Length: 328
Ligand code: NDP
Image (cartoon, rainbow, N blue to C red; front, side):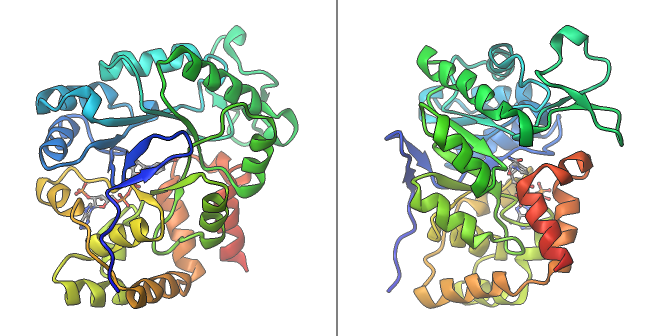
């Protein structure tokens, strides 16, 4: 039978997170303020931000403009990969930019750090070395266990109360296991790419088994329409009289993942929050359809998601998986 899609997910900390959040990556300044305001007025109560998106000041303006009380909104931000050696200042900068006193969730954006060459030596992360290709300083986390040290800093933010929950992003099963061995506070989420062409069913199942909520980034495939018009998705969308995007977003919620669709287009923002009841049969069709996607698409997807971060290819586990899948 059909079930009402969940409106919230329960986290291992006891907190409840709204089942759909507004993404803000590549939401341009000049547009993101109105997008956030429109989303909150349309019923969203969850905004996914990051220092690295370089628009948190306008996101904050959008929140204030909406008139929705701060405490009614779930705000996530992320520790940028330049800031692994000064976590407290980084989160303060995000709080100041957003104009809020606390975050509901703060994520380690990547498990690798790097800093531009011109950063003063005293501010370099521990064990920094240069990437021969780009000349940028980076950390080799295979050997330094740096992310465990960063995690301890994040735990202190929870003790302090300025961050209510902490989580990770772009972590593989292997690295999450390493973190679980030495953490005092368990990550509540792992935010990774979960799209129709990159559904990562093993990672999703493992995270759910370990009571870590998988958050789905790029749920529309980052370019939106391309995945929303794939045949299986399209067929189900037509049957329900909705857009492909609604099917993709509802499918993530139904498989226990927390989608974060991005849009700066008012009509799409309004549309994307509407979940549809998908039958067990439709969910199976979608899961199968997703797995049947070709590695070629997976590879294109990887280029789309991390255009400026080719140094991560060797270090980012989820992208490694993609590259391997594409080569297989
Ligand atoms: P999405 O999969 O959310 O796709 C966004 C694109 O889809 C935009 O071009 C948008 O266009 C378009 N779109 C939105 N709604 C519709 C619709 N109903 N029909 C057709 N097209 C639509 O991509 P993102 O990569 O932005 O991922 C979502 C969020 O996840 C990010 O914004 C960010 O918050 C997070 N993220 C996190 C990462 C991490 O490392 N932790 C990495 C990548 C993303 P338009 O805006 O013009 O309407």
